[in-house]
Length: 102
Ligand SMILES: [Zn+2]
Image (cartoon, rainbow, N blue to C red; front, side, top):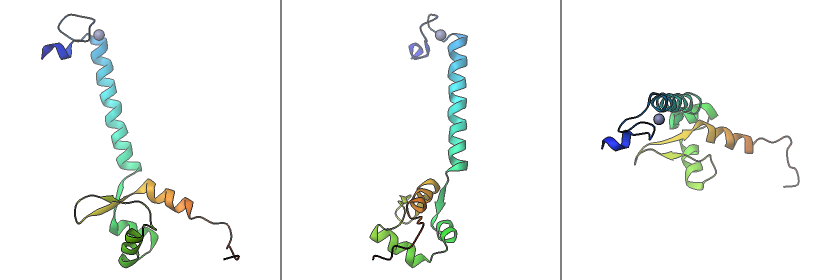
């Protein structure tokens, strides 16, 4: 429908200013997407294990116990970890001293 492209400023079309704003918004969204992919990538299980220096059984146990960081079920057999989720989990587990009260 042509009408969908009408911004209301001119009949049956989009005015230059609105077109410019739309293009700018699209550009910003694309940049944001790229930023997220770059700064907050989804790590593979391998990358996650290497980063923390843990074994596959440990990672598996974390997932079944729910003791590890939240993960993403990418497909039936593939999982991933969003880097920001792992960082958040690490922050929550960061301690300043041993609790000897037990
Ligand atoms: Zn307009």
